[in-house]
Length: 249
Image (cartoon, rainbow, N blue to C red; front, side, top):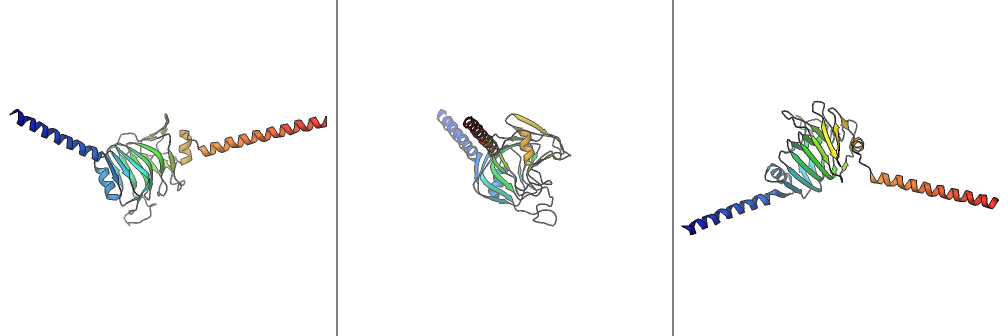
């Protein structure tokens, strides 16, 4: 009897071990195309997705559970249509985002999101951005922080200290970040600095960098270099004046 019980317990432990291996294996997934990406996003056991190729998607991708996506500097491009006329013009508003993060938390690293009405909709969620995030090529701008229907949670955007946001197609009507006038104020955090973005606000990339105190290292280096050159030049002038006076005397 004891032997049978021991065999049963061993069998049960083996099943649990195999199940744990499956969860562990599913926790991180490498994807190469739209179908693999969509399946990984919809699988609540997956917590980490690694993008291994540029991907075209014909539909908006909805993130509804905690998830980290490592882009490896690849591009996810929306190539679907817009409006009832099925136009390919992404300046026809159809509420199409490359990613919608809905009532959850997510992290995006080193990725370009393009081709849609906007790159990201943070819908009552907390989104972490790290590395290089390229928002160029979307018809209405980069990131919308808002609440949708029946969503009360405040939208939050957390930027890592190594963040490099790119938006080469920004215009006055397609800002890098905005909060719709019918949504609550949103929150942005970086390096311990927290800023409230008011309902109805639209921010350019320069304005976003300014309120968070993000400095352009190249610009700072140029200023320092110019100051140093100026001091050297001034020293040379003073030296020459002194030498001229000595010779005159």
